[in-house]
Length: 191
Image (cartoon, rainbow, N blue to C red; front, side, top):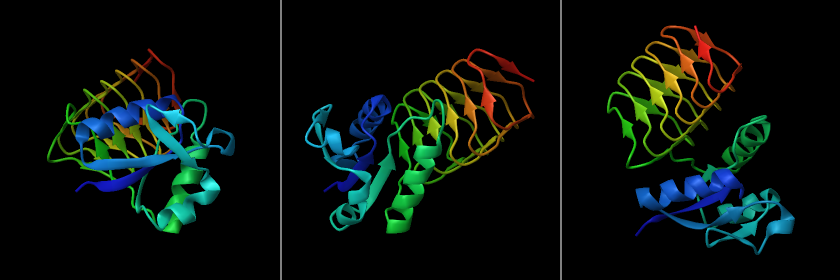
């Protein structure tokens, strides 16, 4: 029998996370937490069952959660809801697509979602509540700290440190052994 999980956030990013959870086949999605006006609507056939003020009540029947709000302009809401749910007692499993490659010599912390076709090489550490988006490549000996979004098709070369709360845009390439703190524009070369 699969463990139950609740998804916090019902927008576009939620669609992608649902796809990964369904393919991973470890969790039963019991529903989605979103704004009050959306309760009763569905996201890919999963009902929106509550708002974030109802998390304590939800915790009585479901102990696992994942943040399914994206991180484009800001990650403040992702961080706030992660902390709120953690304080209630929710467990945040890491969600890893079965068609991603994550080295057995790598650590992925709680609440992080690793999307389809990601490659994370050896001796890398990924922090809490991160989005490692479709086709990202993170090479050996990297550190991606908490609450980061590594966007689609990003290339992070060996030894890079991505500081907490950073956003690395789609198709950006980070030169080896640098530190990133903040925002990296899509398609750029950071060196």
